[in-house]
Length: 262
Image 1 (cartoon, rainbow, N blue to C red):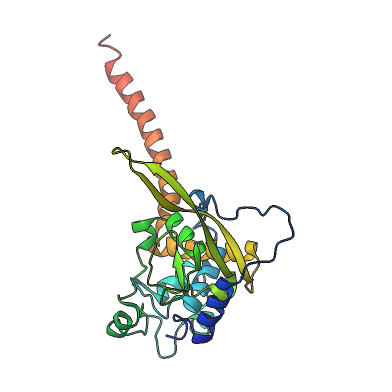
Image 2: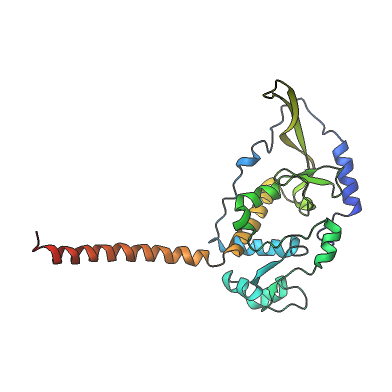
């Protein structure tokens, strides 16, 4: 639970940071995040080091709340070429065995009480929502002191999940602009539309490093959603080549059988 919930001191920092205006120097500020809906994960499941780092990231920051109920530790170690010693030393929770499924230690009933809902299993999240969805979700948290967790999210508004990666990314707030539109009845309605992010406090990682951290995590979740996809794609090339050769041979046989007919 400690890895999932924001501490009281962190919430205090969120509220203080949100109340402060960043000092300006008169120069125009780039609108960071204005194009967030076009962000793409661009991950590669065949990139083994990336998937290994993603496994480390998941165990460190996600396993406290989320499970991978269709993946075994032993299968993870085999597919990602993680030696048994390192698997047991660095990834397996105390008391777990390599033959067990990857399950969180958080009781579902307690999670529902604390968050209002049970955190979802992430085994098939990359297939259900898409890699880009997860990538955008992890990069669009912003400070909102009025919420219980102190944050909100552009990809999934009113999410119950705290920003557990805030120590890495830092704190940022969302700047909205008012947009007026006229409806079919002629009435003018005004709505708040996201404009850009403003950084309030730095994290332990630079923007580029945090982006790499998120991509590695998405890469790992993409692997978990279909552990055999790399092998399937490699096999698919040989299947297509076989079909091409078989088609050519079948055409030669057909021509031999029908040569006297014409």
